[in-house]
Length: 321
Ligand code: ADP
Ligand code: MG
Image (tube, rainbow, N blue to C red; front, side, top):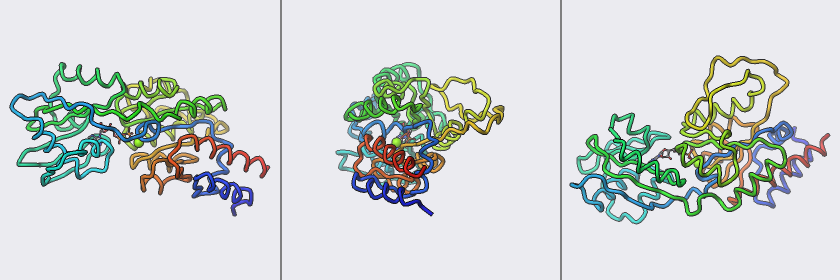
C-alpha cells in the first residue's frame, strides 16, 4: 500500500507538472547517493541543427548528397536525423533501411548504398576514415559539436556538423551545482563521443572522472548498475572518459551494507534500460518509451524540476518516519 504522505506528495507534484507514476519508488529517495544524467536531450536541449555540411569528394554535388542522406534519415526519429532532414524537400525512396542503435542508419537510395552515422558505424561497415578527416572531425568535437559521417561505396562523402541551440540547457549548471551541494555524486553518461561529452560536462560542472562516453544503451544500464553496487564491489581501476568499461567480471561482491541508490534522468529510447534499472528514473522531454520506463515524468521540460521532485520526496519520507 502507498502511504498517505506519498499520495499527498504525488498530488502536490502534479501541480508542479511533475507526474509521479510510481509512488512506491519514492520510498527509494532516502538511499539515493548518485544522480546520473544522460547528455543529449537531457543536459542539452536535444534539438540540434546542421551547422556545416562538409563535402569531401569532388565528383558529388552538395545538394544531391544532402538529399541522399535525408532520404535515409527520414526513416529515423533520432534528433540527429530530424536535424539532417530539416529543409530538404525532395526526399527520395529509401530501400533496405536499417537503424543501428547508438551508431546511425543505412539504406539504399538511387541505387547508392548510403551510411550516416558515427565512427562505430564506419568501422562496422569497414569504411576507411583517413587521418586528415579524423582531424577535422575532432576539431569540431572539441568545441562540443557532434559530427556524423555520410558515406557511400566505401568512401566518406561528407562530414555533417551538428550543434545544439545552446551548448547546454541554461538551467543545467545551476541544477548540477545544487545537487553537488546537497552531497550527491553527479554523473553523465552518453552515446556521443568523448570530446563532445567533455565539453558538455565542463559547461555544466560535472567532473570529468564522472563521465562515460561512447555508450550503447546496454552500457548505460550496466553503468547505473555498477554505480548502485560500486561500494559492494572491489574498486575498479579503468578510467572512464574514453571507453565503455562497465563490464568487469573480476569485481567481487564485498559488503552489502553500502548499496547506493541511483537516480537516472534521461529523455530517449536509448535511456529506457537505465531508467528502469535506476532506483528512481526521471523522464524529461517527452519520448514515449522513456516515459514508459520512468517512475517520474517532468511535464514542463525543465531540469530544475529534478530538484523539486527530490525535495518533495524527501519531505514525504521525513513525514513517514
Ligand atoms: P545519446 O546517448 O547522446 O542520447 P544516442 O545513443 O542516441 O546518443 O546516439 C549516439 C550517437 O550515435 C549519436 O551521437 C550519433 O553519432 C549516432 N547516431 C545515432 N542515431 C543516428 C542517426 N539516425 N543518424 C546519424 N547518427 C546517429
Ligand atoms: Mg538523450
